[in-house]
Length: 51
Image (cartoon, rainbow, N blue to C red):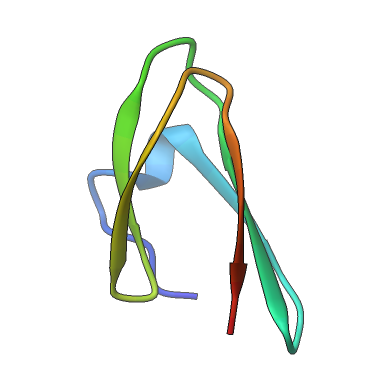
């Protein structure tokens, strides 16, 4: 998984063949970039991406 360098400290990613789970571990909203996709996430937010 390619995670933007600025996002690495506050983002955890779990990946499988067909899906990716992205977790914002911070208590504030962030903009994340994972695998070339940019998106916003709320504090402690979780996002599921398909591959």
